[in-house]
Image: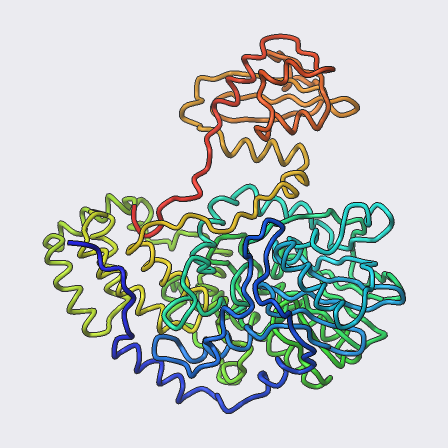
Length: 633
């Protein structure tokens, strides 16, 4: 029987739950709608943004359907947020400060100076950033870029830099500002675990989902990520302390460093001459992630909350405007302080209450189920979990303090999913009986239970078509009811792949610029995590690199571990082969661009020993899989 791949309408229980949201939330409050459209100057005439090869990377009108009334296949609160995020164009924020919004997941901010403009956070890819700057110039004139500023180390805040700035302009004196530690965190996050993060990001942002009332309607923080070329121009000015002041093109900036908040390297910026405060991604119109569903280091809500208090104390009395690298600004000094205070309390409450409950013995899942936010915070739209959620953020705080283990010895040595699934299904009377009872639960609206038990059937027998269909239907209904944009995308992506097969990784952030920005230490670390350990247990290989003008570097594979040592100390003794060459050639070999055989033929390269040992060492590296299964074993 052919697989049913059609989307389904909302079940009665889901439709009723969505209607309850419509009745219980303050949809009559239109302040956000006014703020999101304030200062609108116009948008691009061509709604499709293309890269240099003509491929579409963004469609400005893809979310036009959000102008309709919210259907019962979407949570009305998320529909409202997505409608606000889908407004696109050039917006005047205040005198001399403009934003490009709706051209990518993030915003690009443009601050006018005496001769040109400072650009803050140039979107995800070159094409969208170039289109945004072109729109600005069509309204404000051909002002050159006289400064670039990255607020933090996530790709949607630097990836489009080559669409608005060139290496030659930087060499000519255009400064690039970033917080201390920016490059290290930007490249390590996207390279070390980049394959796994990229695959999971396909679920988180739902790039392969059809856009529409039964598909992708947004991600809460923005709509989705563009699919063009990611780049990186390294910073030239390091921001190392709070209170540091810099001036570029007549634009005065006072910085607040906020490491360990939304990113490991992040900063806020105050513009004293404009009474304006840029909050980067530390205060946006949603509850943010403490641990993203794509995976990342767990963020610290306690520190996050304290830095928001510090921002209020430093800049609250001199800021008539707060804007960020996502969403829309807040105007008015009193409103700014209220907004920052509520954001502060949001993260502080989550941290303190999770720690209180874990000290009472509650487990991660129990805390997530028990956690209820204060009514005063719940009444504010900007505290809702459109991107992060109270549920998975509570689990993140627990993980930060206590890790994966809940203390119950029954959970210390559990079977992996496939083995556990076979046993569960056998204990429950076989697949047919599990599916019969799961269909009853589906009819009763107990969707969470359906996906839990049917998951066991799928992992015991991934070819069971009845299980695939029921699981897809249940995941789809959970997506329809979710207020969180990334939860909706995860649920609907699971349904999509069960019905149609894997979509792989639509967006690749492991770009050449990021690889080029790796230090040799980081590049060696990136290779070490690719070693197939069991296959390398008996290997003992040492390769010594002698870069012209650089440090001697020895790679040794032994006991399944690839270590690297600078210099010629005892741990670097006894190489099988020594190679004299340029650092660029070292990188080319380690990145797989140049083979060991080709290296021997290069002029200026000197090899002492057996070059075949290098070939043997590289042969112990495994390739990551950007198409690994998620909803099946």
